[in-house]
Image (cartoon, rainbow, N blue to C red; front, top):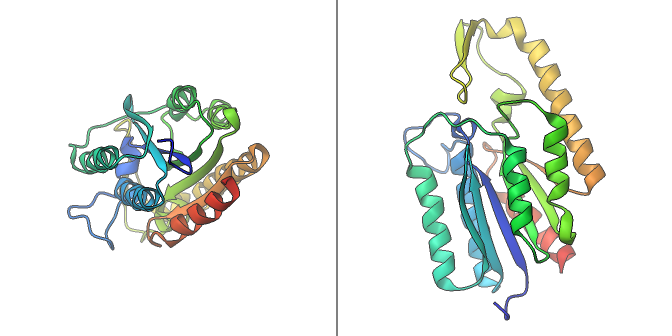
Length: 235
């Protein structure tokens, strides 16, 4: 690893909400949040390998599922790609998560200055914003640079675009559900979600964390462009 130019650590949220929307066959035009994040991570790893950079990987859900430190060997890269594939093909279970718990643990493991990419939809079982923001801040220790890729299906999760036939909305992490007409709650829902997302952007700005909205319907160009810009700044 002495020949590597940069150290990078990719963090992947594999909680149940990342497996929404459910898809039967993954294709480039039919991705849910976890598939989008895994493929984006694999693309970044491919570039990092070509540039002889060291890359590490952390995956969490209701546990700290996987950790590999930053290395640059071919064998290491193959292992990480294999782990990403496994993440897509493991049977989905209801997995609750407190993201902040695992971000603290991951922050403690990354000792040497690194460029950190976090893929998450920022949904938690418990909405404790202060703990979440404190964990994001912890990632900045040891002079790391942090990029938050906020993975979302913007059309449905932010804009709440559904037809107004009665629907059942299920919390994939707790199994709780509610039956309603989407138009009845659209205004309040979009207001609450926009307030949360704007607070998140503001906090990232305060902590000097790069915030990038990663809409799963818009492909990987923004992910790769962000990487190239941040890499130049980091080096």
